[in-house]
Length: 137
Image 1: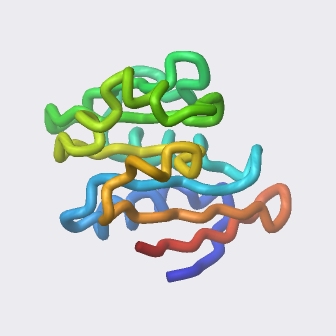
Image 2: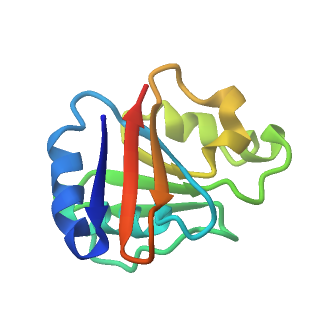
C-alpha cells in the first residue's frame, strides 16, 4: 500500500496504522535522514498513550516505552550499528521475538536478524510538508 500524507495529518495516519497492525509486531522504518521516521514513530507512540518523551535512541540504540494498555514498545535506532553482533549482544533478538511492538529505524543495518514477517515502511519526503509512505512485507 502506498499513499501520501501531510505532516499536519500525521496523527490520523498513525491512528490508521495502529488500527491495521493486525498480528504484526516488528516494523522496519526505512528512508533517508530527515524523511520522517522518528516523527512517524513518535506519532504512533502518542496514539498508543506513551507518556514519556519519544526520541530516537541514537546513542542508547533501544528505548522502551510503556503504552497506555500496559504493553511495552521497543524503539530501535540502528544507524550506528556497523556489525550485527553489536546489537545481538544488546539482546536485540529477544526484543524482536518478544511479541511486543518493535519500531526500528535504520533496520537495514540489522537485516540479518530481522524476523521473516517484518513489515517494511518506506518513508520519502516529497516536500517540506508532505511524505510518501509505502507498507510491504
